Image 1 (spheres, protein in one colour):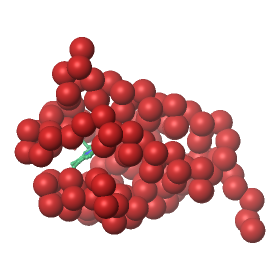
Image 2 (cartoon, helix red, strand yellow):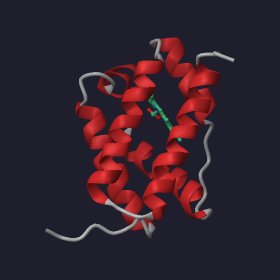
Image 3 (tube, helix red, strand yellow):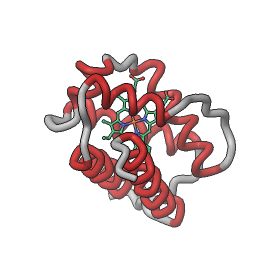
Image 4 (cartoon, helix red, strand yellow):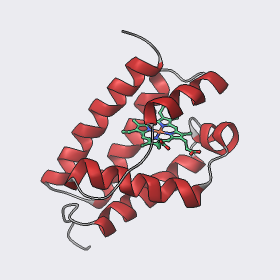
Length: 127
Ligand code: HEM
């Protein structure tokens, strides 16, 4: 088997994001939020997510968006809760571990966990 390496480039981010949302779309617990509620246009969403993670991980690229607003609107259409966030995070971390290994992979797990927490608190107004 090929040795795993760290997340080092935009190409690596693209692979990770593609693999993650392939799982999300088919997921019994959160898939419907994308497929039915948001009716996600994947050709737009995926490049946006490459940009998002490129900024978070490498400080390069140009993400334009408003995640707080987007998730609030989603929650208004179809309520999401802590379990959805935990599940999202579990799938994300599993996908990272499946493909990569190293400091950036670990950083991505911890930054996704803290963003998930802050999104969750603000979207669900738990503060
Ligand atoms: C309960 C967990 C989550 C669900 C169900 C969810 C769902 C969604 C949906 C449906 C969209 C809109 C896609 C579209 O344009 O159709 C979206 C956008 C987005 N999500 Fe999430 N998400 C979750 C958690 C997270 C987390 C934890 C992060 C970051 C670590 C994140 C980052 C983003 C970003 C950056 C966007 C793009 C925002 C924009 O367009 O301005 N999401 N999400």
